[in-house]
Length: 609
Image 1: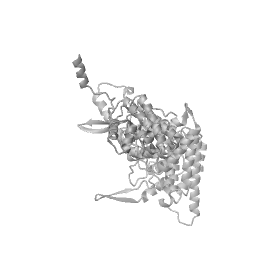
Image 2: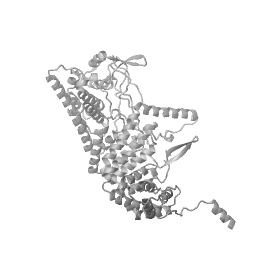
Image 3: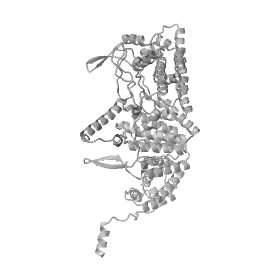
Image 4: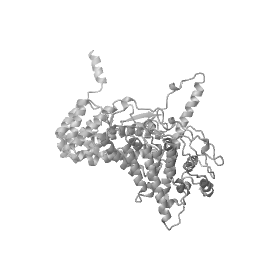
């Protein structure tokens, strides 16, 4: 029996209760006198990966008693203490560490930034080494079930620092920015960090605008790095693969549609990351604007101001972003007052001569796309915006007629005018049915009161500059209701379109610039699956104009029957008036997915508002 006991003792690891060297106070004194032996031994023991809870508690208690001795020359030792694995230990260790942290930042503010960096480093899953094909690869531990508890403890530590050091507000935002994970990290790592950043804004509102600007900026980088065509192609590829598998393995058995598993995540890797972040940010917006399920006006207005400021700074100047702008789309859906405030802001930017031309044109694109696509905008508001647009356009024509200069189609001189006309035409294509449904006679009188014939027939020739798909559909709608006839102008513009020669690798090809405004519609169909569930009920999909009399038989081509919202097809056959770009058939389940995936319940944490 005694032999077995000795053998077990010899084969077992020693208990980590033995300490070497003197106390912390004695070690610091020896270090001051030039004796570094115990100092280095102390650092070595603190860095032991197998250190026990009892040892951590003992060390922290000693450090608390002599925190005033930890001057700038002890920076390396303090950093070693801050690296202790406290978030994953017992509650006693956590309490002791927080007590030490409070003493340290109170007595030695020189270590404030180091403490903040330590806390923020716990906002993402810890790093683990994964062996793949014999190669060690560093990756995040996305399956750690203790993540919510670790995040809670990190936020407790940050709140404690903010409470003890009011000047934290000056240093926190840059540290949050510096620690933001690289956008190529896993979607889970990005999702955790963004979620924790948004949690910080709940108890540290002074940093909210900076945090939102940081998040939106990183999301925009993801958004513009992947094209809509790439996202759609990835989805189509998976659907074709799924269809092929069903054909191969399910030929003898009919599987009910309700039993077919829905695709719950965005397939494209960049789209998946963006989708995760959009889901978190939209959930945050909803939580901020609602208290116990009821809309909170004051908090919503404050959040709207922050997001609108970020919109002006980052989103509006960014060309061809596809999804990030839907954060404001979603926020505006909560109340008409928010919608009207956003429309009013876009209108002010559009008609302000002091704004850069490119921003005015972008504002026009946002205005038209928002009016066309947002289901929640009542027709009274749509008509009010159309009245403003029409009035401004006619006022612009008046000013050109009064001038001594010759008026002609010149994009460099009249960019905001052309952008406004395109926004008007685009909105009418989408909203003409709603205008006429209230009463055909009054609706037609309203359309005729716009005097669209003057706009279309003017020397500025807006139909020549507008996207062909917009011009063609506007011509079809106005012809059907005999508001204005545009086909003669479209034919003339087509004949006068100047070809552009492009050279590449010694091969020249000729094309026609069909998008001289370099325009895009910011609220085109939303392609991300998880976050798309929040957008789908609010979104107006394109409803095909199925009436055969819409297009004149001599110049039109039959509209294609595709299962997607394809209002703005990019392929444009040259020298054709009706270019085969008429919107195709679309069901309401195309623009937003019918089902989205969400993280498991234990992976979602409230913002504690």
